[in-house]
Amino acid sequence: MLADPPMFPRRPPPTYQLLSDEPEFNPERHLALEKPARTWSLAQLGYPATTVRACASEVAVAGPWRLLSAEGVAAARAVAASLRTLCQTSERTANYVAGGVYRSKFLRDLCQCREITDFLSDIAGCELLPHTMPSQQIYINYAPEDLARAVDTWHVDSIGFDYVLLLNDPATFSGGQFQFFLGTKDEAAAILRTDAAELTGPIQHELPADRVVSPIFPGAGYAIFQQGNLVMHRATRLNHRAERTTFVPGLVARDTRYADPTLDRVTEWGEPGIVAEFARHKAWLARSKLDELIGEVDLATTPAELRAALRSSVSDVLGAIDVLDGLRVMNDK
Image (cartoon, rainbow, N blue to C red; front, side):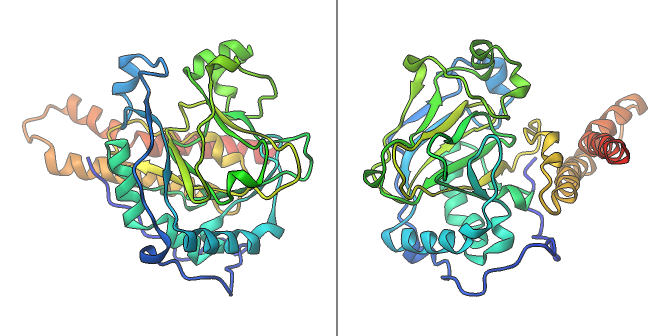
């Protein structure tokens, strides 16, 4: 059940302003794709076969791998510098900019570059697309102003697939390491004495050092790919003030037979247009499933089987309606 990507929204949220002066993304000059140094599977993290079979990909983490050329790094850093004044902060992430594809054509073209998505699809072993919620197609994370804060605390992601692209030479800063937990999120939750459902929020406690992997980035322009909703990860504190900027683009599996890992709570993040993006994303999933039902349904199917098939096809939309009803109740209070 392979779904085509939806069109980019015709009218972006009005509060976002597009950069007027930025480099033009050119994959021939800006990309330097190289295979990952290493791959960790979900099974290696301890996930059971039943969980792995329910996922579009068996890959947990892959990398580091080179994405950008030197010219690509320079262009990406220029765009990141132009957007830095728009930084927000949260309990979990010290300094970040959201809505990147609405703010920058360079970022939009980077996220929608077919060469990159094909490359990542090969790594994942399943076809991937830029996330169908444009706000989730890229975040930019910057170094904290307060050195006591982590760049990003321990957490799992609210979407399925993403990659962390480092724009600075790691030799120019100390600390700020990307790390992941060699275990399942349920194990992490048990160690941290919390519920797995709370792991998308800020976690200030430590995980066992002998279970933490710190991949070495060879230089600027290298990235780590992950199935972030199942991988506990973070970026540690910096030891001194320095530039440390990362792009974090998000993706979805093109095969919509698998359960959608995008969490309902993204609707509560307050980013312009995100509730409509969520509804649109769920409609995209349902359309794919309805298209398959239209093409594959056996005309001898019983009414009971047809009811079940229709309910399954529109379950994403029905769930989204429940989420929106919940938001209405919250907003009415």
